[in-house]
Image (cartoon, rainbow, N blue to C red; front, side, top):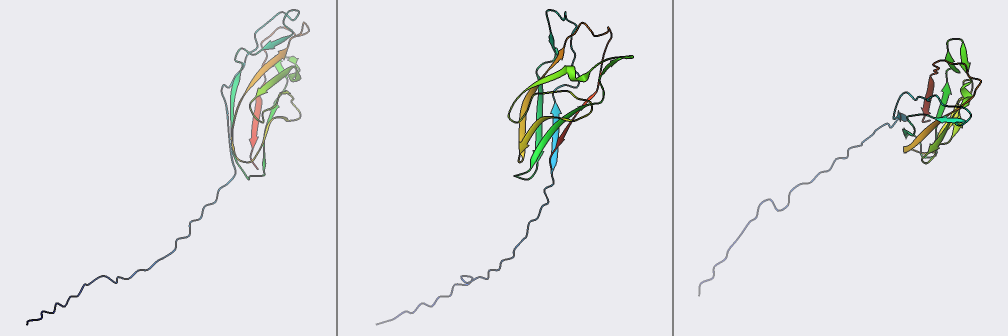
Length: 158
């Protein structure tokens, strides 16, 4: 009787393993981005008897407010007119201009040249989309002329 013995050896079945950790850091700062759909609005002339409130020809104006802030922080959108509406030495009080608002957090108001007016408010980060529609109280007491004023919107993300 013959007996055969086979011997085997398998290399590499017990390899070496090692690990290493990587720490990932970032600093996310507060940010704000505001986009008004247009940069100029116009109120056409109208008879004050039949049209007591004139809508801007560009109504409704789109507005997009984006903020990156803390989850419990309140972001605000404020508007302040630089002056009354002026045409040479003639003026129309800026508080004759009002706006309505659509969209979450956006609010209606009246223009002011001394105190910033709130036009929107939101808690936490995100994007808010809405519209503003502008109106001028019409009056027989306005002197003729081409009137203008600059209005500044400020979006703050604390």
